[in-house]
Length: 391
Image (tube, rainbow, N blue to C red):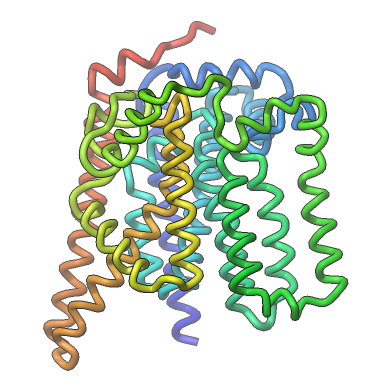
């Protein structure tokens, strides 16, 4: 009972903090709108029918509805991004809870919702937030399905529905393919225990969710390139390798300027997160060929190869964000494991180690909040890319 209530309290605290953080100054931080938001609002002038254009349809349809309800398309699209950001946070919290523990899920979610990277994406009136939400959406029901005994069928139904939803998001077909291969190869015994009707109902759910996508692709097959991450014009070899080189640099060392989504040339991660990311890679590497490690490494490898093909690879790199933060939390776990191995019976030293990690996470969160809410909106480069539209 105690553990149950701790989980409930942690969930409520993270939900409140996430709602405050992700929605703070949503419409007033920087006056106007940027070019990506303008492109989205142009599409939202008319109902974005999934049968006409299926790419990012879950976001576009929701943004259109919210914009109509509040009679403000820009604010409606930004609110939609916040909602999907909150859903991504919920998925991240419960995934960490299934993989590690409630305590680690709580501190990991705090690091997640205060990341300037996530704050930039979740405040945009554009569908970039789906790149963060969709991977977590498919990972959570899969983890639950493989963990639960009581709700096996329900978890599999949700997994089927999440696969259908994620198929509307660019780059996700690759993630879906990785998950399906891993499940078929490593978890075949779980699938063999499913009843005939569970498989049938799951297939019906999956194809029902995908029906608009199939119809849209039949009418406009060119969308398939966009869904797998291939641009209309493939970059030259030299351009591809240049963008391939800069993709990891954006995470750890130096970003390519794109004032709409980050501050100057600062990297996406701070020093603590970068160190934990590196340690997290080690954490998962020594656990190969376990399921989690295979999924994380395979998805990251494919994304690192596909993202540099994109015209706006600085935006497309958002698809890596969920896996980066899962690695960061793996690094935190490894750091604590190493510390506890040196002090197996010294409670004072163990508590000091935990306190130092919590303090580091606190400083990291404070840095990113200052970076997003104070430094970024006051930067001249930021003001130059936001235009106030006359009504």
